[in-house]
Length: 265
Image (cartoon, rainbow, N blue to C red; front, side):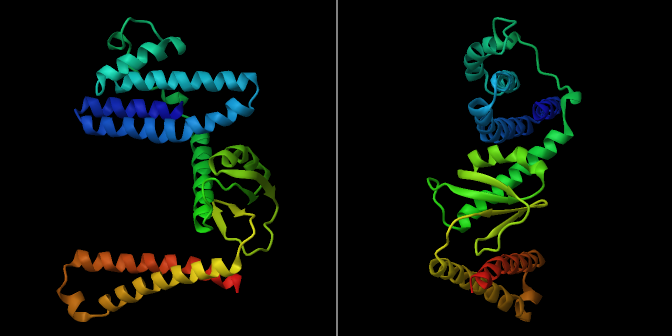
């Protein structure tokens, strides 16, 4: 609801300035990235596991936010929003006119923006992305569910049901300290996360060596290029700067697989 208020304010400001491109971008990011990509998925946890009051509140938020989003989008997509609004508005108890064209324009209520909720959501997104990165590093397919151990304080418990769903996990466990293991560890804020799965050391070692070899080749190529005075003296400054940034990026990336390989040794 707080993010909806921010979107309402940004869309209103963009339209006042005739920046229809910014209005469309704001709506796309809110509806697709926030509502569909995150909230609809998070709502499944409440709808599946919550009590009656939580389920009712979640359904109400889903339809009310969608109804307002349709009104915000109407100037840019008039026909589809009219069709959808006719079905959604009665569910949200918001059909106070015969057409979306006559419905009130949404006005942001800044007092509904909750900084604490925004901070919690940012932390949750970071944790989910960390789990997804771990799955990618370990080559776990979407159908493979694995247990996750989280080294964090008790305040992190609120995140676990959501991470289990979004991270495709078999279970989530809060621990005081992660076990000494060969599994890769991800850092998310003050938390450390580990997928507790058995690793084929030989296969993982081969994969890491291949990744290291590829990154070392990129580092050597860029280092050689930048070590050539004829290139750095004659090439445009922005290209030289780009190569330096890429060299630093590849060097940073190299540290992670090297550390993981050392743990497997």
